[in-house]
Image 1 (cartoon, rainbow, N blue to C red):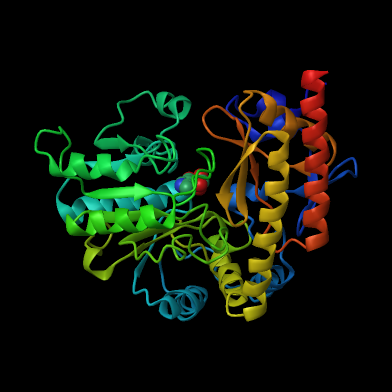
Image 2 (image 1 turned 60 degrees about the vertical axis):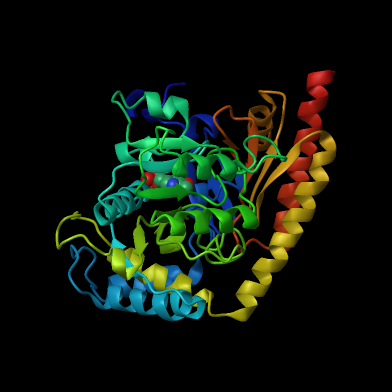
Length: 416
Ligand SMILES: *Cc1c(COP(=O)(O)O)cnc(C)c1O
């Protein structure tokens, strides 16, 4: 049966092919389709729905704002909603962590925040080259794509993607190798062929590239290597940030202070499009209008984002999140008995299957049983487990039970 989606929507659509339901309602960790079936959401909008769907406090604030005719679109004019968001960001997130950043509102997608970060770093240093890592993902606009690894996505661009030197991420060459030995040698050797870089850009957990997580010691060494050489350190925290790894920023565990941080996906808290780049004040070098855009800081997103940040001032919220990370860790580790290797950190986890099609088959079979979860990495061999941070323990168990059963079934079907 052909649908309006098949007839009209571009061939480039993806998620809907894997999960071909028509969704009509969403609340917390649950999605409902138009046939009345419910699904536990371990997809979480690829990280845009850390607080689940239609969080009641955010929804109420949004309705109040609309009822009062608060300005929805305002270019980058001052609004009360923006002031409130900036105040919360500073008071709840930045100051308690000793971070002093300027906030650059970019266009509303993660790729926009990455483009801004790269532009700022290149302008501030006067250099063009950027160091990026194997299996990194930073978005699909050309600058962001140039620092991304995935072959299929890169080759679809149709242009040369340059000014980037790719180096191995932590663990890329196996556990015995510290890949920073190679990077530091490249940076210090006039014969390496690598131009002095403006920036090093990385994710602390590679959300799209297979859920590898960099170790804290490796991250600290990377930071000091960058600092010693005047290289701008950019952490792309678009997917791993906003609480995903258990702390607000993913680099807190390692104790980093990046020069630039990119945030998008869950910064609005509600799934509304919004992105920003946090910049060390000395690097805030762009002149007014040099990185303009029509949708820079959306007021509806400011309203829900302020409510989301308020959650972080509750010790109960952070304590609950810590417990949920431990619970998920336990459940994920128990699944490695089935021959998978666990990856990731906090509430951003993965299971690597050496058999190429297994992860995709598990994802498909789980969908049939009412559990949404996707695959990650260039080969799709990693099952990505990403429940909302606010999921109730009992539902987290239900979802993991479905997953455990599905893995057994798929593995048996293969051998049987
Ligand atoms: C999703 C993502 C991006 C790109 O964000 P878009 O909103 O899709 O442009 C960039 N970096 C990381 C780490 C991401 O996960």
